[in-house]
Length: 266
Length: 347
Image 1 (cartoon, one colour):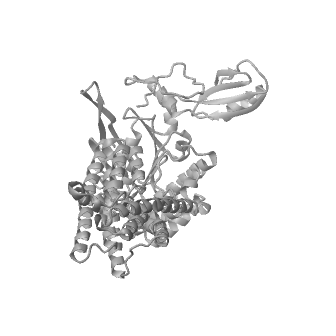
Image 2: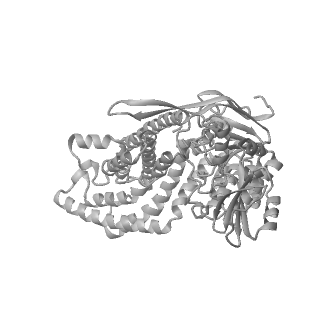
Image 3: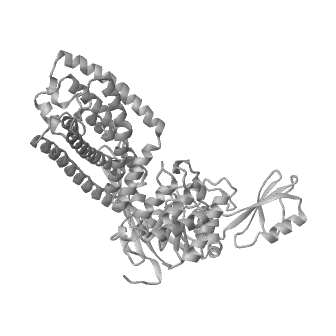
């Protein structure tokens, strides 16, 4: 277990070394936050209570999206590019002779990265947003705690999706296409563009049932106090269910990929 | 687990890859490639053996089978009594692997972080870890590099860092794939000196793949040559030179242009202005030749070139029927004393 602790710490520190990139990232998040905030204000002005949110809740949603963008890797930016590259170049073979579980190794590193991104790229944009707009942030410590649990589960789901996508490179030779589809899907179905709550009918139903909604929509509803009591338990169960299902899928893919390398030489 | 004197046992091992190729719109052609074609050898505990051959000869495939990341199609492999393909993770704790062109180090982080990772990954007892790290740091000259991010290291520094990372858990067997490729002379000497000490003091068994015959000459008592997936030669390096009738080249810079030099110890194979190339048997010392030339000719400068592995192997083929050579792959710009070299395939 200490091994994975070291890996997670390494994941945290390797992103922490790039301070200028972090500052630039915070700047970008903040600028986009302002653009989206004014767009949302216009939209909610026209259609108040859209998706069940009032204006300040909608604005909180915007800034939360910016704050979680990197932590939940909704647009990628985690380990997956590196893993795909290692598969493409064959470096993955080197990883296989080390006494370590591939999935746990990458998961530990990604959790470290997410922890850094939550602090380094999450807190500052949220603070800027709270200074410039009136946000609907909860007063209860319990709500914040529930929100953190939901974010951790969201990171797990996010990792599990990206791991499955990255492993497809074993069969596709070039993972770029799938990565792009996954990037687009993540951007839309996480609720990064617009809250999934406002989509009507079947599209909304489907979007809210897909795993990506665990990355932003679900944590946002927890923070905004929309999920309480059994609703909160349901939200956690939804995230945990997707996390387990996708992690198991990743594990199956991993053993198939390992068999393929071991027999066919990759 | 039988604790035999042989650390590595390879018996009639084969590896066949199926390569699918598009042969038309829908039709796909299946072709079998025998990367390793019935190889048998033994490496004794504490032995240092060179494993050489041209590109695509089957070296890396063999090493991969010895680490367990590739399953043999036939035959039997044992490393430290373990079947690598079946117990890859158990074997991983007892072997060290360094691939010259691939790194296991954390790219963005200081070198020492990768060692901390190895500490936990191989569950090395704290004291053992300290001792081994201190020793590697001293002998491989890493003290100044421990706090430097790996991405900022030069190739030679990174290679030394990789070698240390592969040895912290006291592996009984070390596989080295091109450990000196691309290194400068000083780094090469450091790496070789370290490997020699490691072998002498710890009795670590070393299997070394290289293109540099000097590595073999300085480190290995025995050399195995593989080509087209088959073992072509096994024995001493001198024996290989003899079997291949290989020649070293003495490059002489004269003070002025002269007709080809004449000596009974070598033959002049090329003249270009004041520079002349002389070929002499690889097993023979260069000293008497140099003395003889310096006595008779105005020598300004000279250097000795070792024969290329490709050339030595090509010469071995010349002695026996070659198994269907398919392409020319000798980009060597140096003069080749062989008037009609047999092409060596680089699959």
